Image 1 (cartoon, one colour):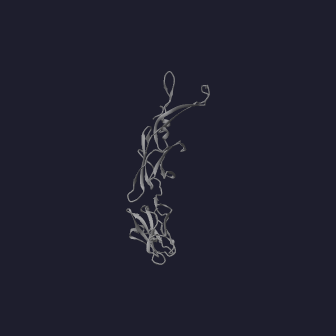
Image 2 (tube, rainbow, N blue to C red; image 1 turned 90 degrees about the vertical axis):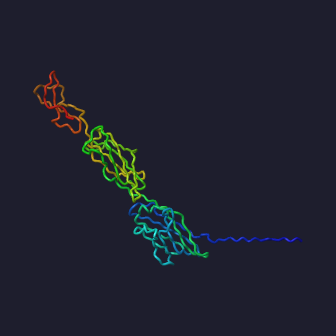
Image 3 (tube, rainbow, N blue to C red; image 1 turned 120 degrees about the vertical axis):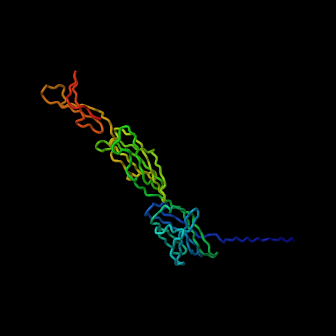
Amino acid sequence: MSAKNIHVVIVLFSLIGIESINVQIKATPAEGILGQTSLLLRCSYTAVTGEFVTGLYIQAKINGRFKSIATFYTPSVPFNATLTTDGNYLSNRVTLTNPTTTSTDSAIIQFYQIACEDEKEYMCEVAYAGSGGSTSASSGVANINIKGNPEEPDREPVYVSSAGIGEDSNVVFTCTGNVDKPQGRFRWVSYRRNSNGATIQETPYESVTTTAVEMQGTCTFNGTSQLTLKMEQLDNNAIVRCQVVYQNIPHGFLYRQTDGINVYYSVRNVQVTMSPIIPTFVEGARPITLTCTSGGNPAVTNTGYTWYKKSNTSVRLGTYICHQ
């Protein structure tokens, strides 16, 4: 009988180093608004039986590397949460909250004033001990994006010769101000008005560009936009408005505008009217009133008119017609 050798191969799998703790990080909301607004950065974890969290570290990506900005402790290590040296830029702008249990809880950075430098990538590292010894686990990455709080332009649009502008002249209007972050723009609108100030025509200028420069020491942008208009008679008493457009939304209450613009134009539309209007008049029966009117800016005064009677010979009856 032949002997069969049976070889038994025993394979041992090493499970040492496999992480079983679950770590997550989340910013609420994910967008922070510059200034005194609230934002919560929470590092949460869940450990399995036999694992005990000993410390947490929230990290931020600074100069291309993740660095710890805050250290947190569980109740088994009775220390207050602290900012690290790399996290000192958060001083006086955040509060830190330690976890309250060693198995399921979270560490919190509460922002109560948002700055440009808070726009970073963040992650969390949790140190814990288990049957295999001491090790750590890390979360994925959470992003905090910063946006500004739009403001109205610095002042009303500036243009040359505020005392008066001639018809057919080209006038350049300039608008400046903080267009915030992400970079916004200015939108121009002109409003032609009648003599009572009621709008008779509204014209938007959507294609006018805004040039923006990032302001030193901040993450916001200062913008400048210029609108060139050829002035016409109908532009007399018009206003020109510069409006903020932020994240493609025009902000109707964030604008500055000119006062009514004084546009000079020459005399035109001279008309003579008669009262009473009857086909024939009886000599000496009643007075006849002739009225001369015209358009122009500045307006013609009574002494600016001259009357002539049309006949075979010109007979001067009064003053001359409209001065320009």
